[in-house]
Length: 266
Image (cartoon, rainbow, N blue to C red):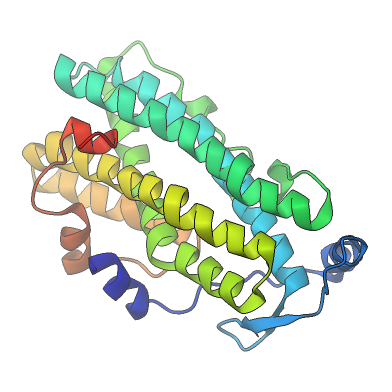
């Protein structure tokens, strides 16, 4: 309920202004698959038409961007084991982020990537990702556990900001476009979002909350402020409005999730 209320407060999800260089080949691929490339699905926040051709390219962005999350989340999982954390916390974070890494790849390849390919027959690649290839090289473990912990905390906050946008804005808007399209491919995407993507993205936000309550909050206000600003830095990568302090407090919640909740075993 909280996520639904927040999504209504945010502006419409931004649809990129794709150039003719991308749109014309997209229109041809859709036509070759028997899909009308010019079917109108709605308008974006500036009043521009969202056609099936633009939606097709948007699915490609989703596929590539989700896939790009595989590297950083796996890197955080490894950092957790080299950050000088208590064994219980280190093991929990490793398992949770290692699982998230696999789930991000699944969202990119099996959900949005499959839909993108089915509509146009061209595999997605990192050139469509808003995050490039994920760029996890800077997350290689350092010899100093304190450096590893600082990197883990910062990137956990950035990823948490991105995941909140996915839940509150991106997925609901993709669902809305699929509903208006009313095509078997779009209907399957809606089913996958409902049954797979949304539950897993919700657990990814729990990882963000776990880091906050187990590592950040006990360290004091300076660390809390840094986590707050890094969260909004993540949201800004997707052109989403920043959280204010009240919404940040509601997002991180009052208590840490359990290890079983993080792994979907509650």
